[in-house]
Length: 485
Image 1 (cartoon, rainbow, N blue to C red):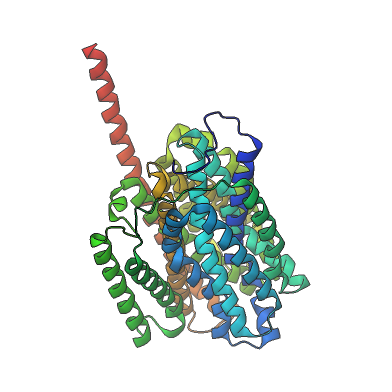
Image 2: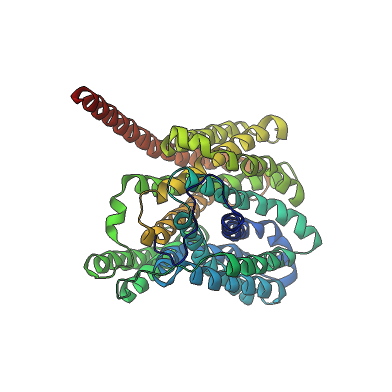
């Protein structure tokens, strides 16, 4: 462990300092996740007060995703190279300042700029936070327990953001921006006092060409995915954006292969569990974010629910995650992450498939609630397990990189899933926005969501098959050893 201060986790009983470190970084990651969804319900109020066009309104959401998803890889490696504590503290401070400015500005362009800055800050806090946990808690039950608690805040943030946005919008949309400020400042003060100083292992140099091409390529890729549903997937600007992104990312790989101090050591991608965690995270969140979008439209447009009612409709899933995730660690230890990931994604596939039954007269209890319960169960099982699997077996000096890779996969997967589902929904609705037109697009869109989730099941199955083979080899080796004795 490359740290100037090492907190012991050899005992199952943690002291107050360990709990403080865990809760501090978990709260910040919860804010990052909260901010992804919290502004959504407030968009109509923002549009009315600031006079924004629909295209500009979209970028209040998209600017955050652009900064977050486009710079996560750079953020993760920066934490490894410059020090996790240092990067975490600076990024939390920037996040708090951008939140404050977002709640005060009266110009749409400035509001969008603050959202991008917040996403950028989150791209540095999320992987730094995960690597602080994975280098503080020893691999095994202690780390699994810590990540399970950590995952409560991240997973709950996505659902809780919708609930808070419904409540806060009733008071005023600016409170959706101002709420994170005091929480982030309190976390910053706690982090200064509790998080130990980690000594970075730079190896004597920095990969500036890789940082530039990697960040630029990631930003352009996310930008193209976010903008495509609005201007068209085959539009010249969309195609040029993707070609440039691909060229930059290919250049990035070329640079990394030859760099003495690569930003991304490509050998890390040879880890089967890490690769499956990243691909599984991308498809898992691609389906989830698309489903969330479809359900919000269905509840408000078809059933005529208010913003607050819609937000509360997601509450059962959030409660299951909040109360279940801290207790999931013994199950993960007993079954292994491949099996709990598989159980989680299967729960989501069933939940999405059940939602295909909806129509204009469906009841919440009979048609929506079962899917929400399965959504919560799936998130509880899979989210913690994905984080554990993505970081197990990775050296301490690459934990930030591993966390950045996973979070990049999650954000890019979510952006792609949402873009594809949006395109299918609007295409089958014929451009209309009424309840009848929306219902015409819901079934195809939900079919796409279910299909993406099925891909995540196949990825998870490959992990279970690999685990069974490894267990069989271990059993044979143990029998041979016993016979030799």
